[in-house]
Image 1: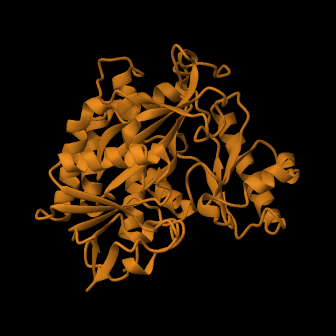
Image 2: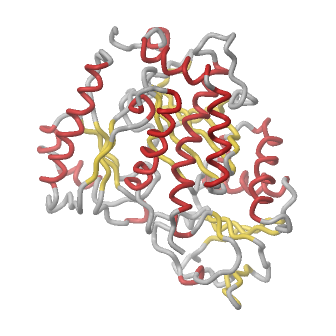
Image 3: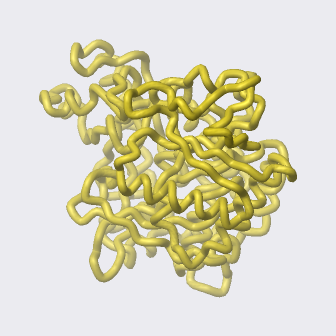
Length: 416
């Protein structure tokens, strides 16, 4: 295989042709398989999935159960979002009419406010009464308008039938949510106080092993390799021996797969905080020497994540090149796919004109371009070229649902 430089080149690779054509040709079996999975493992209320597409490999690198960015979705597809919300809420209770959204506390972030407005409007258009409240007030205390009365959470006299968390609980699960009888979506134990990226990708590996047997393909083509070790402190260097050991092993495993598929690129890994989001606590490493010689700036970057929470555990994840570039700008792009329940509703491309195809695009300076999904997630065509937009978006939808299924298994196995 030649060094991969563009979509035109990488779509000619055997791995790419084989992976994409197998998924398209087996779409009926795939849809039947998913239907069986959702019966046992109902999906979380909503999800967004960050994908990376190398051409020879497509895989999720992050699964967010408290998604923002709804303002970046295609506004022409409201009908699709509304139907998906109705279906997701009706599965919880057909009599549900009132929803309280618990938002993040950084309410001065105009982009986040726009996302909350978009999410609220979708739910209202679906026929539900909606109120929005942050968990904390400006003093950092529980919002005085939120009251736990007789195990029912109320907001300024509003008694919701369901609580929709759009707060990832990075700062802990507040006592006010204890013993609440209304359904909390998603489960409060899926917040970053307790959730682990390592555990999520362990579930994902299990899902992919089953799925790849169904299609008789190499599971590596659909998942990032990963490893994890114990506690780490980048300031004191505690635990770095373990980190170096696992990084060395992971780079070797990636190199072996690159050799198997004749991929002429340099393996790299992403070291990420095992809990947390917002693109914080992330570092790229291409060699063990880089890891052994971290400078002060790099160490400082890895000390804390969102809300100033200390990074004490990390996941080492195979770096996946993003070889999809959008014309005519030629920006590096990665698709982000959204769902309500198990129903995909589209998404957008995250773009960055100052990042390379191996870097984290979820960083300041990123821009967004809605993905024109329409019915592409559910309607692949054997008659089209393997990498037509219709088929490409269907493949994205398959990978995204595999990640949602992994999250569904997380939810299924939460202890009461």
